[in-house]
Amino acid sequence: MKKQVDPCMHSAEHILNQAMGRRFGCDRCFSAHIERKKSKCDYRFNRSLTDEELKSLENDVNGVIEAGLPVSEEYISVDDARERFNLSRLPDDAGDRVRIVSIGDYDHCPCIGPHVVSTGEIGKFRIASSGFDDGVLRIRFKLQRP
Image (cartoon, one colour):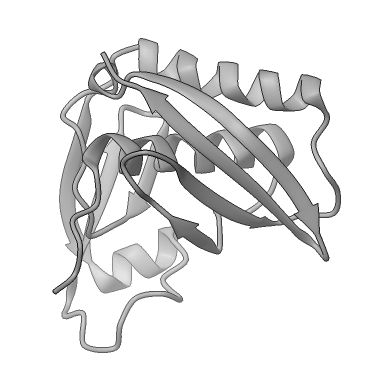
């Protein structure tokens, strides 16, 4: 049986991915482990982040959370999704419709996981640690719940 993903952490992951892309021009994480207590995302990257960059990234994510943006979903055709998104992780038997999760106008991403209704439900985002090894930047994060 597949374990349940925490909606707050999963929504925070989407925001972190978009913040990384906007701030550093990188792709979404290629690997993630989302847990209620602590989660991690791995990015293809070329260096460690400085303490100042980590703090700025944390502030970016918390700004989106504090904005209380609505989180919504819509289903679009696979052909439309292929034009707008990377579908490399989409299973071959996924069908002809793809679920897109939107966080306000900030982030739009194909996803099958559970999410909050508003970013205001997430709590305060905190980067617990980060590390860089052999082209992979790992960011570990926690949430302080409301």
